[in-house]
Length: 261
Image (cartoon, rainbow, N blue to C red; front, side):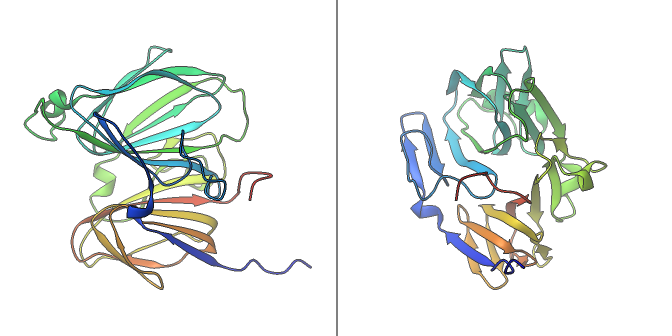
């Protein structure tokens, strides 16, 4: 009989993340990304990328390729324009979840769209506002599928302060208000935390807790600040509580990358 898995909690502080900084981009990487490579920090569970990006007005990522990856984008402030080689175009703003399945191959661009803020009720609109977003990549169950795109407004579901599934491939979330991802073992949850109202980290073989903004006290872990992340293995059930508004992103994962530690 196999020995029971030992729970493990690994805290990664926001200030220790790898960074890419150029004139128009301030990007912080939770895992190895691009020229920043650490063989001991390539992924957790099924999550390969958790980039915390701030893009200057009128700038952004020019058209570039992706393949065999499920890419979820969550905007914290401002708005972001997506365009791809399948003629999908979308404006992503706080409260709207977006997923792009790269599949057999797709080209896309992402640009700051701050001048359209007023169209979405997120402000008066300005040509001087940066866009701040988190982009996350998980591997699909099967390579070589058709590329795809989906976005969904989830702002109303987040108003209660609970942890809400916003992107999932798991059967238990089929009837929830979540965009779909092509991995049956992974789900992204988001909570816009209400002061004094706790949320609970899902129990799973692998979980990744990221504090997108604010300050959160995590049971058995301690105080976490914006940019901090916690990698949990064979754990979960911890209560999170905030004294002021905060926002957390939690990946629940019931598998890991095969062949990688």
